[in-house]
Length: 447
Image 1 (cartoon, rainbow, N blue to C red):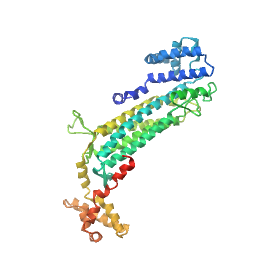
Image 2 (cartoon, rainbow, N blue to C red):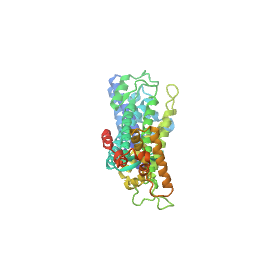
Image 3 (cartoon, one colour):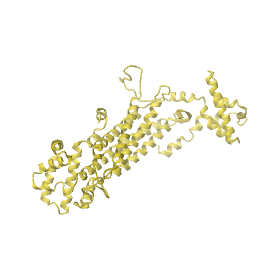
């Protein structure tokens, strides 16, 4: 995890993926399993009290447990055995023989991952719930701020900046839904033993532990929870990151000098370039674009983890130690950054109006095309009339004249003029015509 992410991501998210939290969850899993075994009549109650006392000592000193586990792992070369040994040392009694009874390492590790991903999803869901009202506010603020809509980067028809923001709100509403579903998908644990047969531990123990942790028991497993489940979570994070990138690219374009319809806030004292003092670059949007690539790469790695040898190998393990904390922490950072960017986004309605005029009214071409069809012309004939007028408008513009105007060109075309009463064409070719459904669109979206 890079220093930038460590600095700006939320400490609550970083804390989830610390060794302290991991070993705390491991302790909880082991203690709950021992408690369930008391109910099963396997572990004597007096021995359980000694196990609990040992666990409580480490609960009170998680950094100490991490240090001791790491020290033991240097020799043992096994993280879970280092952990169970560290706990057995503080139990310091024959009762320690019941600690980790009937469990395998992945019972502890995979169930812990279920808890950590669930905890992370809770934060990410909360992040999006903070982002959405900010987008909502910007959408309503610019509900009727006219701007040109573009396809292929070329002027199409008018829209409003508020509709752009409403579209963004809708997309992140879907992101919220996806994350909430993903939380349910990964809220799963397993305590079914070395190859998942529950031969040495009753399924009742698994159910008891999972219920206490807010998880569902895997209906069937091998030594591990199947990795398509974890891949689905990672793909969901990548999808949310892709939505962030989609809007980062949009706003990077809108900040280009030739466009400049919106701009990320440039703070007092900020510098844009080491060489060119005039620069105000979309560096934060670019950062989000780059980070989305990292999360997509992690999602690909999670897909590679799905195929394991037989009941389990550990080719997935080293990958997950990186991609789980990195993707969760990165996305938390990215959503927080996006929220700040949208809150401070500088919008230039005057430039939007200026850019709208650059296509010389040709954004009315479809309106006129359809009006001519209603007048009785074939689509082909109406299309030719509108296209010819548009090409002549461009010719006038490129000749350096200032009177280039699509509507005026149409009015000067006899086969057009004869179909429209005085003022009818001008009334059709208006922003009001294009914006008549804006209120309904907002209402449909619940904005």
